[in-house]
Image (cartoon, rainbow, N blue to C red; front, side, top):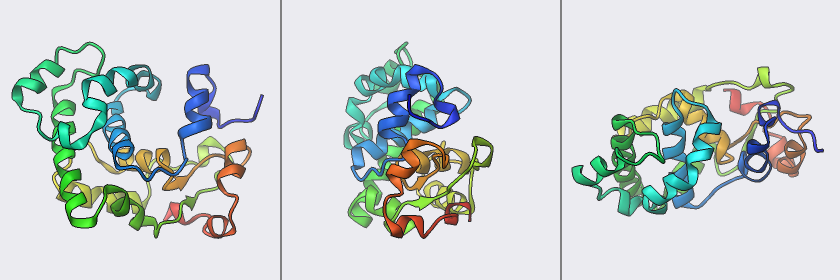
Length: 200
């Protein structure tokens, strides 16, 4: 068995940890998916969200922001009756508001990916934590990004949620140094040379 980050102890987490978490994402639809799922997680466990992920994809049109941005009150009411997702009215409304903000960012910056990756100059930051206790819950950079997303009309994008997003989509590599994925994701000198910058 490979050595993984401590949080990925249960089997449900293995594929997510091994194949997704910390892997750079540049596709707008997948970035929007992570944005919504990280917001949905607030107050819950990530395992809960992973179990509901396929239901979320079905309920939110594959996380196509153009479609989600058009959801009206009737559609949001339908979502509140969908037992497959987290039935929280504020989180459902946040998904729609955030989709509209993503579309505006795409118009302004070309893509949501370009907007997000500009915060790290296009190169993943490397946290290099020795243990799970060394992994921060937020950073000054996450706070800066959070403020800008809020200015753009997004909700459920506080610094902790935003930092979780950054970790998930590979803006920062916070795999612990003993984890096999840490070495895989820090194979380039340019990434390794920026160690510690994710911590502000």
